[in-house]
Amino acid sequence: MTDWLVSIEGSETGHSVALFLAIMAAILHAVFGALQKGRHDPWLTRGAIDFCYCVMAAPFALLVVPWPEPHMWLIFLGAFAIHIVYKCLQAWAYTKGAYTVVYPVVRGTGPLFAVIGAYLIFDERFSGIQWFGVGILLMGIFGLAIYNMKYLVSERDTLNAALAIALLTGLFVALYTTYDAFGIRATQNPFTFLAWFFMIDGLLMPFIAAGRWLRMENAPALGPLMTRGFFGGIVAFLSFGAIMMATRLDKVGEAAVLRETSTVFAALIGVVFLKETVGPRRVGLMALIALGAVIVEMGG
Image (cartoon, rainbow, N blue to C red; front, side):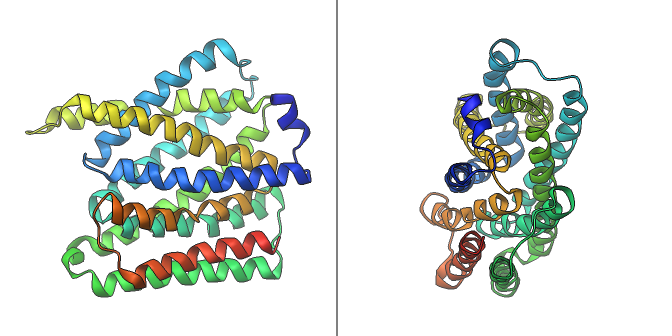
């Protein structure tokens, strides 16, 4: 498998596989966001998820895949720091605003910054049609933000804070997307990066969540929380792993934009499972974000 993946990097086959992986990551990332925003405190859920995927990844990292090359340890340290800031911002945003408010802004602003980062780091260039797609995507994002600020009166007290934190979180989405793309390309075996990344990445948040759980007057039962963490860990493997692999096989910017079709799936999840009121206008704006991503892919 590893040899085949390495052999198709930068090829037409690699592009097709990367496209599939990016769309799969979009669907699963919407599920992942809903799991974190669901019935439990977002900090606790994130801690449970990180604990589970850390434990699941450890045997593969220590016993199955080749050990990282010496230069990879500094790269892992950078990835660990970036992801900790991202996860704290994400949990903070979810405590301030509804899932269907926060998620589209986070996932929509991320690709714009990622495209810029891919240009600066990997010398990737977008065509005029692709930039048109990015423009449509941004119209959907800012239209959604304006709509939320105007009509979501029930969340008025925390809405501005939620949008600001979501925007900052989107910046870190772009940062980790481009940095992780650099990291997974820096090692010979991509599965080495994935296994060690998940094991290292899951080391801190469980302690933060445990401290928060201990301070709660009515702390939730650990059984349902850890069950959610287990399923979230599996989704994280598939979602984050898919997008990281996509950025190794093909262009970072295109993979980052395509992943943000997750906003459509997020809208459906928000309505069906989280019982949030979305409405046709907000659904239309989310669809505009997805349309922009499709144009970016078609214009490439």
